[in-house]
Amino acid sequence: MPKPILFLLLSLLFSLYLSTCVAQSPSLTCPLDFSHVLTIPWNTTDCQRYDKSADSKNSCCQSVLTLIGIPLAHRLKQTSNFRLPNLATSISCLNNLQAKLNSLSLSSNLTSLCFDPNQFVINNETCAGIQTTQDWVSRLGPSTALDSACSSGLTDLTRCDACVAAGFRVQKQLITLDGNSSHGVYCYHFAVLYAAGIVNKKGPESDDALSCLFSLSLRSPLSSKKKRHTVALVLGITGAIFAALVIAGLICLYIRFGKAVKGGEVGWEDQESRPKWRPNTGSIWFKIEELEKATNNFSQKNFIDWAWSLVKAGKTEEALDQSLLREEGSGMSNPKGIMERFLQVGILCAHVLVALRPTILDALKMLEGDIEVPPIPDRPVPLAHPSYRMDGNGFTISPTLSGLQIHSGDMLR
Image (cartoon, rainbow, N blue to C red; front, side):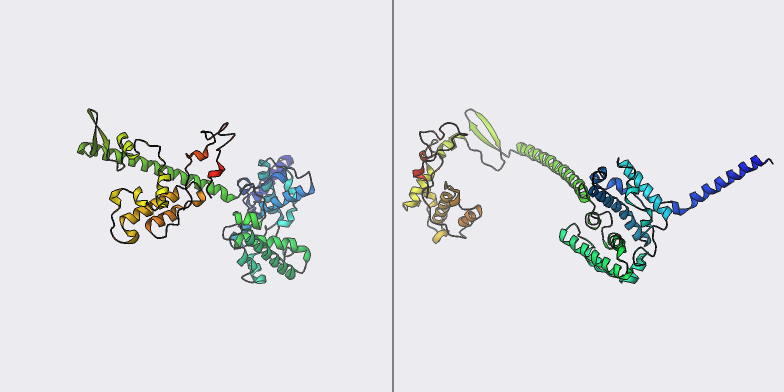
């Protein structure tokens, strides 16, 4: 076989071998899911202007670090591992994260600008020799300050402060165990991952973890979307139920009214020569003649002023119908006493000064005799009283410009 052909075959076989190894190698496959980068409403403002100032760059890198910390916390709970197994996996994950950031129209070099891929690779030198949660428990014990302070309710500022303080206490313990204060940042990252992935009941993507543990700047809380969806669902269901009840009620009224007409359950009245009917709805329909009789032909007499004068003069019985003056029982339990009390409460409720009117609750108690009716105050002048007018008109120029012109001489004390 000619040497060129043999060389070509060997090259082809070697290429196939390399591609097979790469495809089968788990180290080049990132175990972290970065879909949350597109779903969590995190504030991308600092990353859009990261090159404008050092503060913007630091804030952007902190936000991107949180975006890595969220899936690391998930993985910690699933595998008990705090970090990634090797450098190739770390590089693969940073590339995946950068692809998500690119889809948000952010700079294409954010991950390389903010991180060294080695910082996410686990080793015994990271923090106190801890690599797994088993190492954590063996060095700190089964329970730490994080377990009691960071389990839930971290959207409350007081509880969040307590959780952060617990994180610093655990960090101090880890630095003491490690013996190298330069590892303090990594030890604090371990404390945050443990609190978010293991301790907190709601998980790394909850408001608790994002706003408190990771301190991620959010455009709006995650719970607000859920609440809006829930409110819309509740309102929709409530509206549908209400509409169904209204329709059912109208159908019932129609059926009942139809039966009432057929059965003669209607009121009839003679008006001129044509009989007219009115439905028996439970309320009273007054005719003009009845209203004229009740108001003494629509008299302009001030009934409140008239009743007040009689009560003040001790002639309350003159304001009552003769049929209500029976002396039955004793004290305020007889019809006369009851009606006198009703009249006094009515005068109080009609007082022109709101401050002198009883509340509805007090008025009901007075009517029922639970509390005494207080002395009747000064005359309750109604708004139609001439004292509210200067020249026969309640307004001088216009209601907007002048308002009511109240005569100060007749003001109630």
